Amino acid sequence: MACFCFLVDQTRQMRQCKPVAGLCSRCGGGASVADMKTATRFCHVPFYWKSWKAIMCTFCGAILKTYH
Ligand SMILES: [Zn+2]
Image (cartoon, rainbow, N blue to C red; front, side, top):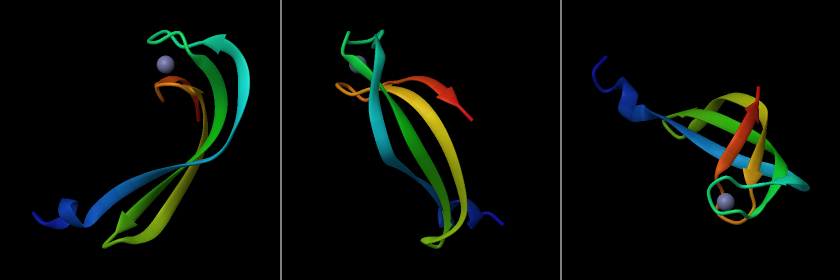
């Protein structure tokens, strides 16, 4: 099973985002709420998806808060 972890990877995708009141704690940029989707892939074939929401900075991309 030693090589198993090399075959599995995750990709994160932002599906849509809307500006929301709040400022980034890192750069002071505007925050937005984003619908995210994480796909877990095995040998580059997605087999598991997870949707989640996050408040993130539109300027530097920092994730300020997540909702699972
Ligand atoms: Zn920022």
